[in-house]
Image 1 (cartoon, rainbow, N blue to C red):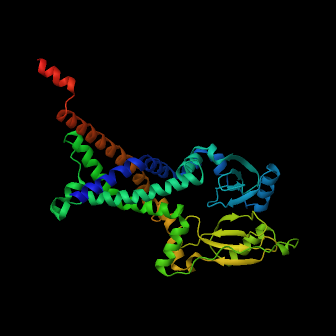
Image 2: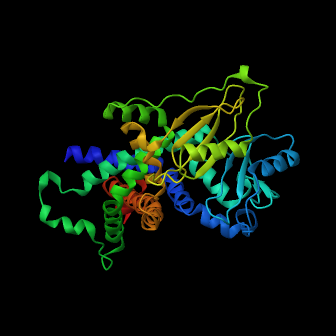
Image 3: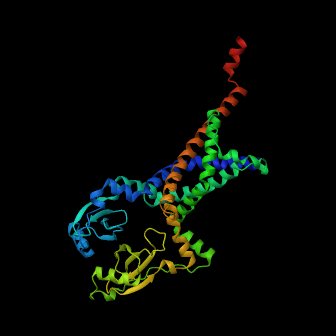
Length: 382
């Protein structure tokens, strides 16, 4: 029982310390699961366009963006996933200015900063609490605490000393007709046990995204895998040569890897490569983890990475992000992810109310044992 008391206190104080961050992360994560669908409803003129003939060269859209925003640089380009989807050009950095272009005319449709739209703001809250790298670290630590809280919660849910295992079914039920304090306890216990597996998956994969270097090294160590090589460098000595047009490089990339191109990362430094990102049909990752690196000066292929042929450690790590956002099993797992995102709210509210009730009861009990001197005198006078 002493061990259970220690575990109970650990579970309680972790919940009080990290609960609000986990609630915020869970609720925003539930919305992000269907981010593209929500944004298409909120901003249809930017996200979708009418299909009309053949697409113009991508370079046409890039030229239009450079002319309209001469003080900004194009960081990356999201290629359309459907015939109706538009180009998304990210300017300067991943969370900077978003510019949208019609793939059938090359004309710009509009622009906004990520934090200026509702879903963009929600995404920034979910990933960095609107405070950048420090926010990422806070959320990563909160995810580690969620793992600890899930383990301690399961320990407390399990009957002590193996007794009463036959009554485990009670831990899955809520006695709605019972007094409200018992309902709170049942709801907290049942919500935790029903969602523990999903919470552990979300927490661990969230940790893997924040502390990715550590998790990558651990995954490679456990699988005895060769680490993924660092990106190759372009050779500045080739500057001034006749580089192939961007659309020709994309055609060349299609000949190398058959999967659709999802993103293009344009070089931001003199030695950076131009990266074409692809999604092979067998990949679960929505953006794919297959890459073709081109020399930014000559257009020569520096390296090709096919995610399907990657070492086992890399393939395992590549699966964490699809698990985190719920796309691994299609629409069903996405809906399940949305539901799971609300569980931290239920667990925090019920846990907090139980703690407050216990605190009040304890304070009342102490006051009864040690009445104030004035109260004792009043009783004596009577």
